[in-house]
Length: 250
Image (cartoon, helix red, strand yellow):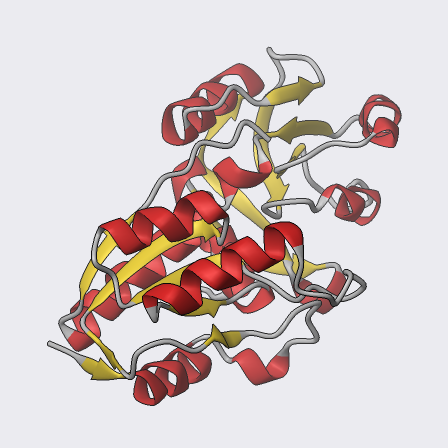
């Protein structure tokens, strides 16, 4: 059943509580397309490949986690940015993007969906805008078992910094590029911290703090939110929703 573009944007904005976040990009409609939306394609990132796939599937809108117009990026619409925006405009395809609001949502958010995959529900929050999560696994697991669980769910082998035979129960996590949260996470009462990426300092902090660190992939850990949001919109509005997977090893 088609829905008006403005109605859809207003609903998502309220559902994700967009107004409460200080973000690095605009959340909501980033590129305007046709007014009536019946089919929505979801993807992690608004890459040219995802845009072209959305056009091929006959989508009226592309819904992503990583969109355009990031704080600090060059403003001229040239080269890759021109190609992406030209493809959207040429197909009259709407682009909706939700960054931090989609990380944090308690039901369809990236952190919530990753927690479910690991068998944990957040009961404590930390970090900038309380994006970091802490929770207890439904049953204790070794690092090796948790790693296997993540690999099975994401299709990507995590980087493990810490002993594989250690038993973990209380864990912290934040999807994507949240390795900077590890400084604070390591001071909390947790056995392990899971994020998407790692940086040079993480190896030393994991060894010195005794908190195991798992880097399960930026793309891999942020697949869940946009898919879950797409499923929610399909149920709420009766939209035809299709998820597009553009492989990314990072």
